[in-house]
Length: 570
Ligand code: GLC
Ligand code: CA
Image 1 (tube, rainbow, N blue to C red):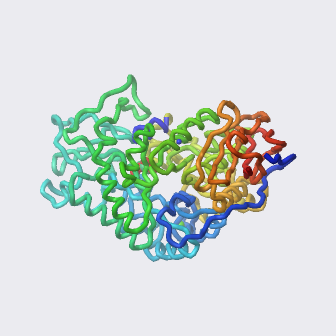
Image 2: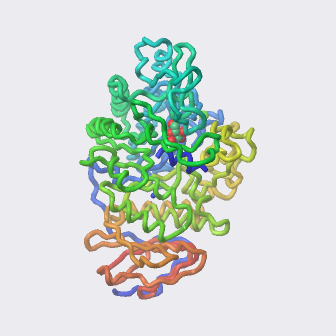
Image 3: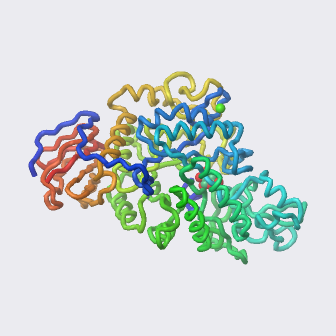
C-alpha cells in the first residue's frame, strides 16, 4: 500500500580450506591514492541519511537535534561514513515533519540554531564528512511568508509564486487531480475565491516553477547554503515540479479507490513533465561551482527514465536515486541480477538505496523471522559492494525494525491517520536510533517523540560494537574494505553463475585486481563452483564473510544466507 502511494511520485592457484566462522576480515592489499581535491568525491563516498528528529537528542525534549548529530560524528566516522544527508531541519510547522518549510535559510529552533549548524559543519569537516541538506523544491509550508503574501490578495507580489486557479464551477475544484496524501489536490481559499494546488498536504502549497522569480529565489537558497559549507542537496520530490498549464484531468486507471478513498489516477499531467530538466540543469550549474552533488528523489519507472535525470550530457543530477531495489521485495537472485544489470547499463553512476524515511526498513522487508540478522548482513554485503554510491539509512547498520503503530491514536504521521488502517503511515521507519540498552535506548533523557522499539535491548550501537558477530561490526568491516579496495570502489561489475537461483554472485574488476562476492539468498546451505577462470582469474582468498563458508579450489560452500567476499588473483 505504501509503495502504491509513492509509486505515483515516482533498485588458479587454489586457496584451500579457507574457512570463516561468523564474520571475519583479512588484510586488504590494494589501496587508493589520496587526493586533495576530487570533483568526483561523491562516487567514492558512502552517504548516510539522518532523520534528525530521531537520531540523538541533546537537550532532553524528546526530539533529536543538530547538537545530537554533532555528538555522534565520531561514531559515523568509525562506521565509515563520508557524507551525511540530513532530512529537513529548517523552520517548519512540522505538519509533514519538516517537509513543510517556512524559511529555507535558517534552522528550526527545535533542532538548534544556525550557530549549531556551523559547529556541526566545522566538526564534520575536521573528520572529512560532507554535509548534504534536503531541499524541498516542490512546495513550501502554507506558513512561509511567500505563501502568506500570495494568499493575501489576487494582486499581491507573490500571488504568482504558487498555483492559483478558479474552480470549474461553484464548489468544484479546477480539475480531478488528487493529492498523494489524500483528497483533492486543490484547496479553496475564501479570501480570494480561488483554489491553490498542493500535491501533498494542503499545508504544502506547490510553488509555481514557471515563474522566473521562484526559480531565482530557490537557486539563491542553494548558493546561500553552499557558502555555509554544504556539499550538496537531496532534492525532494523533484519529479513533480511542473504541471500541465491547461490542467487537463488525469486519466482514471482502475476501478475502486485507494487507502484514502480517492479514485486511482495516473499522474499523467502533474508529474515528470519535461520542463523539470531545465531546472535541474540550472541547479547543477550552480552545484558545479562548488563541487557539490545533487541527489534526486526520482521515482523512475525504468532506466530510460533514470537516464533523463542524469541529463543528456551528464549535466543534471549526479545521483538520481532510482528506487529499483526498494521494489524488490523478496530475496531473489534473479530479480536483483536483473535490477543491477539494468542500473549498470544506465548513462550515469548508480546509487543504491535499500530503505529510507518513507519505506519500511530492509530488516522487515527481507527478514524471514528466523535469520533476520544474517539477512541484514547479506543485504549490507549487496549494496555496499556494488558499483555505485550507497546511501545508508540510519539504523540499518544495527538491524533496526519497522514497528508500525498498533493503535490509530498513537500515529504521528498524518497519512497514517487519514489512511488508517490500510495506510498506517511512516512512523515505523522513523523510530529513535538505538544507541544502547538503557531507557529509551540512550536516544533521549526525556520522553521520545516516537516510541522506541523493544528490540533496542538486543540491537543497539553499544552492544553491537562489542560483539564481533554483530551487524554493526559487519558494516564497519565492509565499509573499511570498500574504502581501501580500488576494485570494489571503481571496478566494473560482472555477473557470474547467472543461472543460479539461490546464490547471487559477481565480480568487481579493475585492471589486474578483482573481488568476488557471493551471497546465499536462501535458507539452505549452498555449494557453487565460482566461474573464475573464464573471467581471467585463478583463485580467491577470503576478505570478509558471514556464516560458515569454505572455499576449496573454486568450490564455495555457503551457510544459509551466508556471505563470501574474496580477493581474486591471476
Ligand atoms: C518526499 C519525502 C517525504 C515527504 C514528501 C513531501 O517524498 O521523502 O517524506 O512527505 O516528499 O515533501
Ligand atoms: Ca532535542
